[in-house]
Amino acid sequence: MNAGTILIIDAVIVIGLIVVFGHRLIKNYYRKIQTPDAYMIQNVQSGLVIRPQNAEIADCVPIIQYTPKNWECTTWQMIGIGNNEYLLKDLYTQKSFAPVGEIKAGALLEQRPIGNDQHQHWIFERQTDDKYSIRLADSNLFITSVGGAVDERITLQTETNSANQLWTLHQQNPII
Image (cartoon, rainbow, N blue to C red; front, side, top):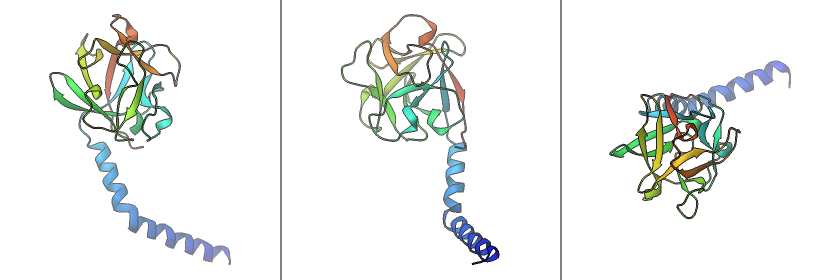
């Protein structure tokens, strides 16, 4: 085959893909940019944000802190369930997160399917105009950044009134 024939075949394949998948891509794009209450949740002390490790979609993936990006995997839809209580849904994985094992100080967080799990309910307690502590409902444990390293696990800790338990919300409309 000559180069001209290969280019024509490639063009036909691309046009075919656009016809087949174009509507879905456009629909997904509009869904992303129109998602209400979609935020990056950034720690005041570390400057890092909450996300599933490696943006994996599997259950039980560790919840870590990562460099801020306008990506779906760093964007959480806050679904209000009353009294400053929210279910957090990751836009990329379409899952939430909850503590691993026993609910106690030092518990790590992992990704879980959204369901009838009260350990996926988070209370956002305003500390200043734009800073919040995030407490696990029905507990005295707060989402905590224990250090400043990328990929470090997020934990639950009792209240310390320190910047590693303060979070800011940055509205996002990610394309990827």
